[in-house]
Length: 230
Ligand code: DC
Image 1: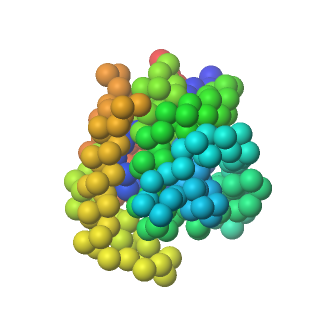
Image 2: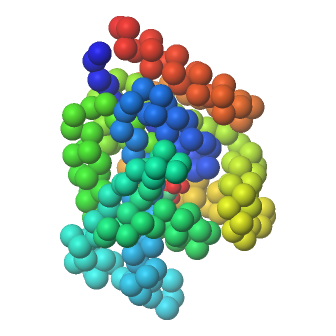
């Protein structure tokens, strides 16, 4: 069967990853969470003192060290999903904290960071058969993807989802803080100079605010089947 490239973009915490992972597993494709890659670079900055006392990033040092930041994915046999590794170390849980969420947008706005990660993402998708989710997958990483989806839901619904996710993991969570973070990230993601979050002209729009995970999964699978038949 022909293999295609599937690009899933949208706002933060709108369930893109869940949809994308489920679809990839169902159809035997590779799944890549591109946001995890920006998060891993942010964790590297936090753990190596690249955030200066005033909160700014030491961009000179980060640019010099970019070549030494290796991000890979390793299948977790327990969850059946890929875990993110930073220089060979499993950092899946550490990249999902509020601390990383609060710092990731400015890191993801740095042109040299985007250039390095986009190149890695394009290499991962060279042979197609990939589902990648993020912000600029349908516009910048894979502009020729056969299936592009742009996912959205209200900030309140997305904040509630992230709150429930953190609580379920036993991590500290405050709904008001999370909502503020969601809105702030929307704003930075949409207004940054390089690859801002925007719906590609040929992307299908999915507002999943009122949809269950099962409904989203079915909808996405239908789109995939339709494209494969064409
Ligand atoms: O999807 P997420 O919340 O894990 O993404 C983390 C951050 O990375 C978010 O602030 C946007 C940024 N990001 C990006 O700029 N481009 C991507 N392709 C994926 C994520």
